[in-house]
Image 1 (cartoon, one colour):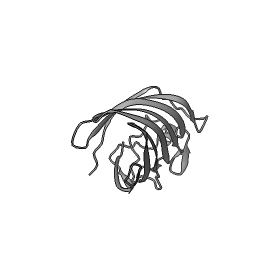
Image 2: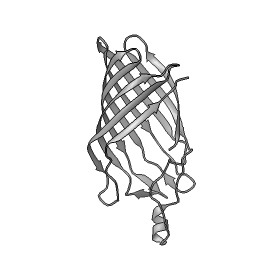
Image 3: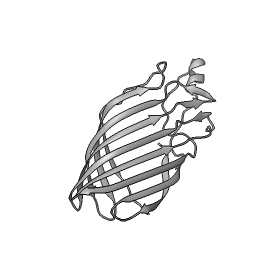
Image 4: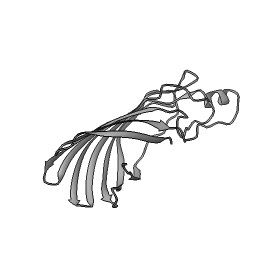
Length: 189
């Protein structure tokens, strides 16, 4: 996976908050050679990519507002926009993720969330040719908890349940995403 670097700005700071972020992915992941060209040549190959091999613009917008008491509503949209090929002729997919979340803060250091997530991934390309194994639309529900680990570091545990998913092409080989468990930490500087 590539490493994201984002610079953010608080647009609203009162009870509501609106945060806009811009940045780039840093290509630290591993990309493979064109699997279609290797397959046509009868050579062993992999179709999975662990990153894009390019610097990609990133944009995010996050909004949150208190509903009542310790209950709040949050929404976000995030995007990655590859616009050129890496040295192996791979250009990654445009990815858009949007969320709507209800969060309940039980204690100063513990909150629970229920989230709806929609993920869109466009086709990727090899040497200008569409990769039929790419392209996905996913709708999921997430449930979990966030713990404040101190020093401004939230630790978030989530379980994601796919509600509906489809690939953009009927020609490729794609897997169905199952239930996913995630553990994330973040730090703002």
